Image (cartoon, rainbow, N blue to C red):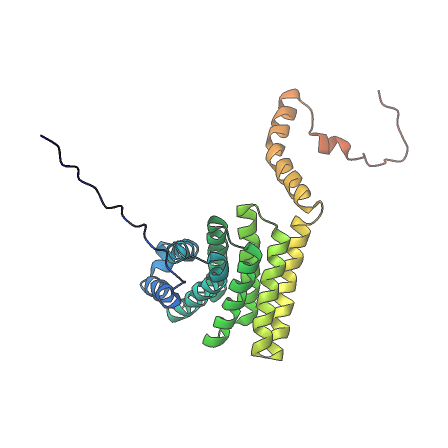
Length: 244
């Protein structure tokens, strides 16, 4: 007796979403922050996870991630304003979250930093926030995110500053001057720490501070003094005396 063969119809793969849904992303962030999750979860993780979920399956991630970053940051600023949060800190953490998401997805980090900072300052202007504080904190967020993901920190700071100043200039001349001054300080700090030799000097200082207690313990056991103390010249007492 012949066995009847059954054929299984192959399942078609799920079609990727054609584009980023800005409205859905904004609703997700505003509902979460409005419910107090700004404290429990943190803006950084909320923005990062929301963007990863919103951009999952999108065909043109490179073309959508910039607008997604703007939506996420602006939604965070508006929701933070509604609950009386510090908008500067919201902007900083939101920018960090967008860059972290872009790093995981594979987007252009410089473009995301610029778009996110532009969205932060624009949203701050819409709710009557401190534009200079938000712009400066947005640049700080880009610097911290760049350090965390191992990106070019100076480049991210420069791109974030460009976006913040661009948004401020569109609001008004006075706003542009205030934001430009604040972001200049933030970018100069990034250059000092991460410019040529800056990162190396920072690592050297940290290593020196970490090793200082061990040097003091060794000196105490040997009955001597630390090397730094030995390098200090003795004060003159009226004439040089030969060592015994």
